[in-house]
Length: 405
Ligand SMILES: Nc1ncnc2c1ncn2[C@@H]1O[C@H](COP(=O)(O)OP(=O)(O)OP(=O)(O)O)[C@@H](O)[C@H]1O
Ligand SMILES: [Mg+2]
Image (cartoon, rainbow, N blue to C red; front, side):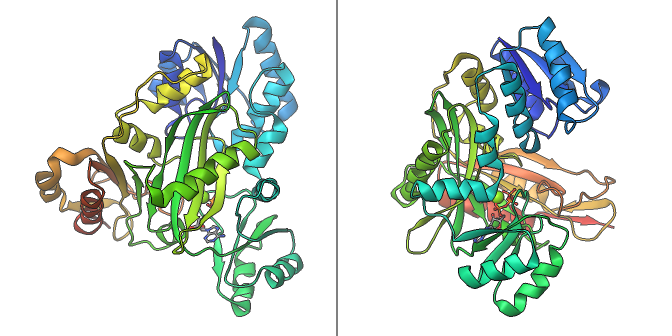
């Protein structure tokens, strides 16, 4: 099968999906803004051809280029797992008459208001919500929705420009901070733990699913620098406590008419046990979450996804043996990494359970933790027992310290 992969080398995990497609037997044609020489080697090796384009956003030019490509090679699928490119992929599919998500469908995954409107119709519990394009509309929405509330971009990512507003007095401050955002979502603030429900589907069937737990809630983890945020893929996604979220996840896929590919939903579990919808994307989660699925179940989800694209099925048996956690570390100080403390002791203590240590080496400049959850590096570990996994992950949070200056 000839598959056109949009942005095969960016972001981080894309080369692994590109490789998965090749491993599943596809001829992978890549297209993207990255110069060919800048593609990560793993992506480059997996591609049978690559075409550089000037811009993803000049739609007509892009469609023209792809039509030309299609006159030489029979393109059978167009795939994109990079959030901003999902709509582009849908438009290319429509232009070439290929199966897969349509532009109208993909908009439901990209626009947080349309998404929730569609889910309201289907009876899914969403936070009370409104779209607002001016300060005035925000104030009116706040009146209707009540406090506390959340103010965030309609098409946001990484908790950027997301604010909790405690009361009317707080609203001015938040409005000033989001002045540059054109379209906002105003939402009822939901108090609770935050989980994901991630799936790989083929023809409307869920072939694989995962539930991860964010510790702490992303809005806190992404705004308080000293925290080492964790994502923890749960060994037992079928436990009773999580059932309302998993059930909701299935209902959401149905309501949005999702058929094939990766999905990543986020949801809240309140102290009363109620599941409330957060958001859903038609792509895998980032920040190493796909690796967590692999470590948790001893599978290769990159290839698993690719198989569903090429063959409409998922061949690997899923053995849920471990809880798997990634812990993101942020250095103290600014500038370059100078010293990493506490690693040897953690390795000595948890050797059997550590599966990946990927920290910036001394000398490397710090990354901007506001811009990337990966921050200054991460550790992945796994254990069959949840409590043990949490204890080890928390130890990595407290006992591993990186210093910069
Ligand atoms: N209605 C809400 N109630 C409580 N918290 C919320 C609400 N909406 C958003 N948040 C908090 O803000 C975070 C970011 O919001 P959301 O997931 O909608 O946006 P995002 O920026 O697309 O996220 P991501 O980090 O997944 O890219 C959520 O994970 C959650 O912690
Ligand atoms: Mg989110």
